[in-house]
Image (cartoon, rainbow, N blue to C red; front, top):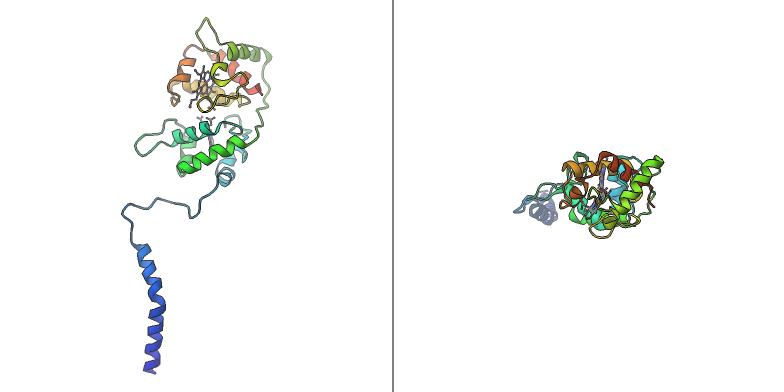
Length: 224
Ligand code: HEC
Ligand code: HEC
């Protein structure tokens, strides 16, 4: 009886030994604290876009909510830069403030932000469909392509291109964007609430009237 029992214990010990050795190695805390919520396997941009971002930007980046920007067809580098600016680094605070977006980027890695840029850049754009006032559009068109020499407002086309497609990697596409979102950004650059542009857009806007901003935002939404 005793022999049998001892053998059983020995076998049990032999079986459990390698397992407990492994567990101990894993249980030992590493020098640095483990990253919080590190995913077991890398999650693709498509899954993040469909799971986390779709509620506001749609899975393919074609937001239909005027306050939420259309991301489809935007330049990859620009999207990645914005995500990084929303997040900031360990040493630098966020360069672009948005209470909504700052919580969205909190768990994104640098790799995620890069692949999300590539993902949205590849999606086909469905531009904004909101109708706009003809007179407003005419004013906006002149401003966009020619600026306002009297007030010293430069032509938007000089940096964002004649079709609004932008010039990679620094000048984002603006064509077809929701007027409401564009106007919000122009106002934020104007007040300095958005200042992740090296003061470029802030300078453009110092001499633009509220009406000019509305007009150019409306025109941009109709550009294809
Ligand atoms: C709850 C709604 C919401 C969710 C969810 C959301 N966003 Fe946003 N996103 C916004 C809003 C609103 C803005 C505009 C912020 C501002 O006014 O500056 C924005 C702006 C952005 C911009 C800047 C675009 C530009 O043209 O400058 C990017 C890029 C972006 N979001 C990507 C994402 C990604 C990627 C996710 C998912 C990880 C996500 N968003 C989830 C609402 C949302
Ligand atoms: C000298 C170059 C230059 C000129 C001129 C210029 N922009 Fe920009 N614009 C930029 C840069 C650079 C950015 C990107 C800033 C960043 O990296 O966040 C930008 C960003 C923007 C954005 C934000 C896009 C987004 O998706 O959030 C809008 C809207 C915009 N510009 C509209 C305009 C309009 C309208 C005009 C003309 C009145 C104009 N810009 C003239 C350089 C320029």
